[in-house]
Length: 109
Image 1: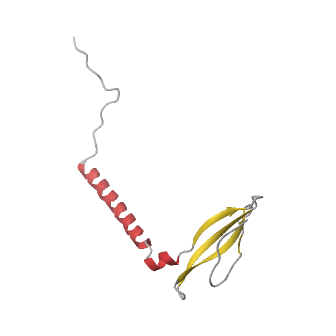
Image 2: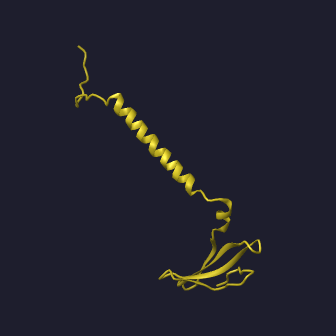
Image 3: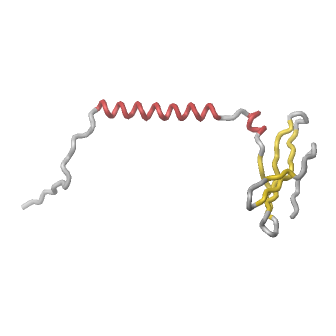
């Protein structure tokens, strides 16, 4: 005497080939659109170098402020200039503390 397993759920017919192909084309179109959008947003070397970058964050002893540096390209003098900024931790308000042509660095709190 042998036992047969019975499916608890009746089998449903699968999607036809046309539905599968349509789904594949739709997926390929979405992937292509995403790739093209990504390529359109890729910055050039000049744009990348022109982006400001923050670093060197230091928290004040009382925790109310965060001092940090912001570096950006100075294309006229062919160099990077770093300035010191401070932000209030409670409000997020930011203030530039230095503004010299040669830049500043070395935050000490």
